[in-house]
Length: 432
Figure 1 (cartoon, rainbow, N blue to C red):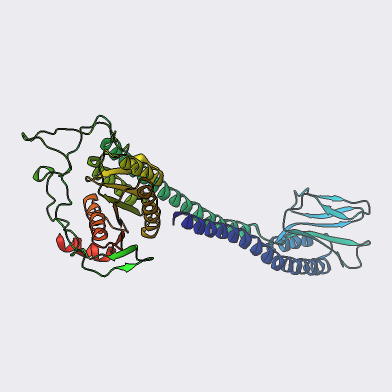
Figure 2: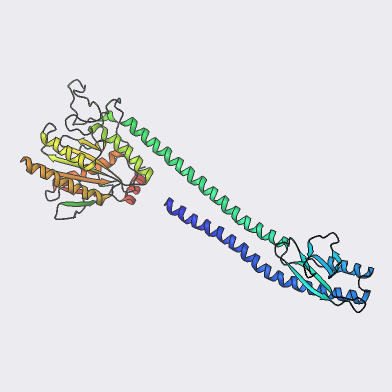
């Protein structure tokens, strides 16, 4: 979404800048054509008035010079004027003008001609009292500098507006990037805290005691081995209004001595028996990954695999653990679960992708059972975040209920919990 917005804005900014430049040159071109026509008409008028002044007042008389000065002053486009004969200049306006020279044939030529100005020349009839041809040469503006200034100013306003808008977009994107970095840092801090080797083991209660049926129809995905169960938040194992504290119940999978003290405490991040994570760390890890997925707007899947019967000390448990590591690829995303199960977290993976992974996982575990001559049942439950903001305990509950449903249906070893985000939001809103 961000890249699409940047591309659209860049296109808009480029078109605005290109349009302003094109408009500037097109307006100058159009105005110069009109200006050159007006300059030609202005010169024709000066030429006629000069001839009339010579005939009425006498050529080069004081009255003629005064009249010529008046005529030149009335023209707003005239830059310089010279009345000359082959012998030299007779009248120059302005009087201190030095921007003209004589050519080899005795005609006048202007030097340092300004941009958008044109030189016009004509022979003036001054009467019979003067011998020789009198030439009127004038430098006339085709486009006024004032118009050029206005065109440049308007184009500058457009460019400046695009510059300000670009600056605002850059600042907004920088703010979003800093916010995202801070969110990622906070998520990393949660992960570091949750999985620090020096952290005391967490004694999490088992949120999976009791059994709740999912009273919905099952739709086989293929050869009656996989089913997707559409969720209804009211029918799923309850997501308590007041979540019980860890001290209110105990995990049945953690052995306790008669005096209430733990007989064995997880040491390190991974179990020495299976080589994967302890079940006690699953809740914290899943919570942290849910935060990360929500901040990145990604999906997340949880898979619970149960093999019945299974003992942690069996060679079979180690081989299944290795299959899980090969499938999930990250050791800190795979955990022991219960006395005969495993749990795995799949980052940025939707329900369909998770079901394909579960199919492959089922086939690999079943192959190990056949190879070792074990007679056991495999049950796999799947759930996904699906654009929901939910706690890890809720997600574990959904996957566990899906696995229980798979255990109840021998021909459906894989059951996926399909969440409905709208129903879930309504359910959470009603619970609050």
